[in-house]
Amino acid sequence: MEFDNLHQVLRSLYTEMMPLCSTMIGIAKALAGLGALFYVSSRVWQALARAEPIDVYPMLRPFAIGLCILFFPSIVLGTINSILSPVVSGTASILETQTFDMQAYQIQKDQLERAALLRNPETAYLVSNEEFDKKLEELGWLPSDLATMSGMYIEKGMYEMKKSIQDAFRSLLELIFHASSLIIDTIRTFFLVVLSILGPIAFAISVWDGFQSTLIQWLNRYISVYLWLPISNLFGAMLGKIQVLMLTKDIEALSDPDYIPDDSNTVYTVFMLIGIIGYFTIPTVSNWIIQAGGMGNYHRNINQSSKKAGNMVGAGAGAATGNIRGRLKP
Image (cartoon, rainbow, N blue to C red; front, top):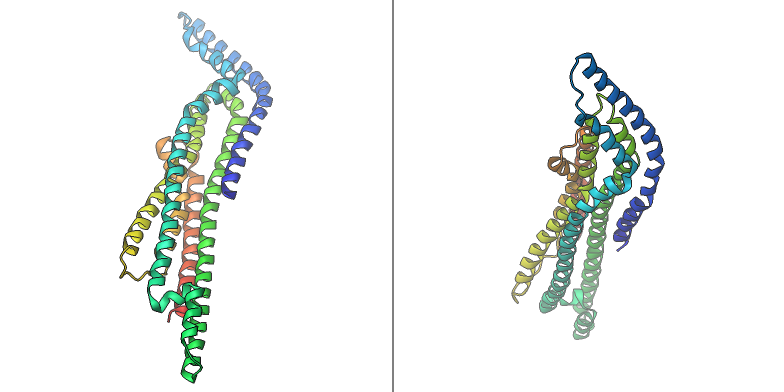
């Protein structure tokens, strides 16, 4: 829930920063007006010099851009956000559904796993204090019984320590997983704020000859960055669906009374590593949907960072898993 609150803070930050674009409108109007003057005068002069009729239609472009600058928060940002917000809402609902299913299956799996361990006399005392006390009462005070008691205490302590280490490592991976999502969302919010505040300036520059492509580039980049959130939601929903399928298979196996559960989290660890690295590919996927030029260096840095992070986390996971199995495996 803490990460959900941080994501909500980023949404509120974007909304609070939007009024700042009004301070750029005055500068943009002056810049666009000067550009429109040169734009119209150059075309009128060219038509008169060639003794050709003046084509009025192309000259309407600066005035249309000027209207967009004058009402930038409502016409430009309001229109784009209202068109793209249903995409965000739809993907968010998909992610919420998958997250709820995953939590329900996880609770069911934990209950079945505990029940399976309780069915086995050799492991029941490891997960239940009642079974541990009951087994101690069955023993006497002979030297062999005292040795058995000592072994039971050692095995129970080792089992609890092993579970603690596994839970701590699992919590660390989950923290990095959620932090990756938060990093992408923070960078997205920063890009959107910058594009929104300086958007009127970009529109004004596009009035000048030679800079007409600035308008299209701004639209491409804004839409491409905006789509990071729905793509992130779809990626999270896909990961949730994969985990639901994995939990379903585990639940089917645990339903067999003769099945002995494996307490290793190797598959889950690999799964979390894939998710951590996958979050940093979201900008590249968004650029496939909306081609936004001028962002190649950023995508290259993101991909390099994701590879380095994956190597570091993978090395840490392998070392931690090896130490756990090497020290605690009977």
